[in-house]
Amino acid sequence: MDDSATFTADQFLDIRLELPDGGRWTELNQGKIINLDPPDLEHGTIVLNISKVLSVYLHKVNQGYACFDLGLLVGRNPDTVRFPAVSLFNSGKRFEETDKTISERKPDAVIEIASTTPRRKSMTGHVKDYVNWGIDLIWVIDPESREVLEYQPGKGSEVIDVHGKLTGKKILPGFVMPVKALFAEPDWW
Image (cartoon, rainbow, N blue to C red):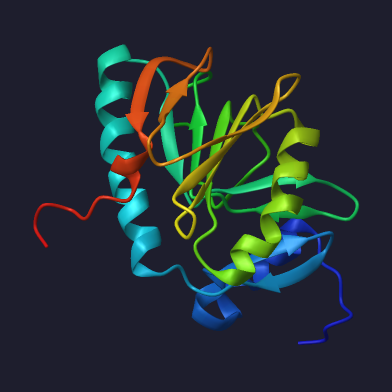
């Protein structure tokens, strides 16, 4: 593939399956295809742990839903598509985005995991894209430092260490999860 080529989100979607690993670990950054390292085991553990807590919370409040690895079209001309670990939607038709590969619908919150060096290096750009797009709550989980960067527009950012707790603020009222629980090995290991 020509490294100088630029793609729209639709073109990216059309060729994605032809990319290494079926395009599963790729993003589109200002029209350029970016290859990321596959997530590691710790990344999977974090997704498992947060998805269990989110599932209990979302069933309890009976509102909203989570999508995993949904492509978010955060910018046009040139197009940028990000694939956060989790996108949370509080409004609209329930589960409306779950069967999509890429969505233009803005979620209420996103969760990213900076689990590999390329992913860690790209997080500043991801957060800027989400902020510019108007995402209300952004969590970037860093397994290396065992911290979470929380960003809310108008309120700035806060680093929550392993002794702190994630709270859903106004976006996920009543949601609470100890940061250390993100990194806990599942019971079946």
